[in-house]
Image (cartoon, rainbow, N blue to C red; front, side, top):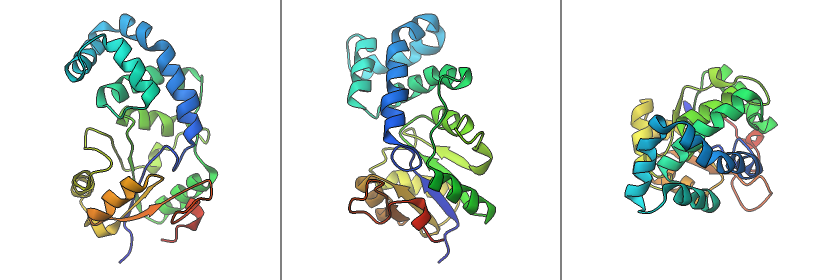
Length: 212
């Protein structure tokens, strides 16, 4: 059966782990307290959600969550809000691997719908692809999914995504560098490939190896 849509992770898949861990995370961490103080109306509901999840000082909790790379929706939402200024001010540009860029463009031209599923917020995903090193790539993408859809290691999340896309799960290919995610996608009926860009045991090591 032909693949009619590709759903892809970002960190470690389309983009380098170091860009996220060494550029984006420290940028948000350093500005977390000041940003919340400067935008009380926008951040108050987020901080309240953090306290509901873990009582205590929400800024301290968020800072620890950044250090631990916790996949918590309020953290990912706030990070995206902070990164917005950095992307728009030119402090950094979204990293996209050359092979991923070429494949996304080729698949889009072939009529294959392209979607993103990342733990980063939808807003942050749009910033990374909208302000990428290769320019604005958002025209290539048909939709975005984040943790508000569900955990990335649960099959139900992928069933929800397939329903939202409007295709049978078997018509969708998921790409990720995390085995727990590709396993969950397969359990939902999607086809999935595990990528390891460092040459370890995986289905592929580059988007160039994906034949659609």
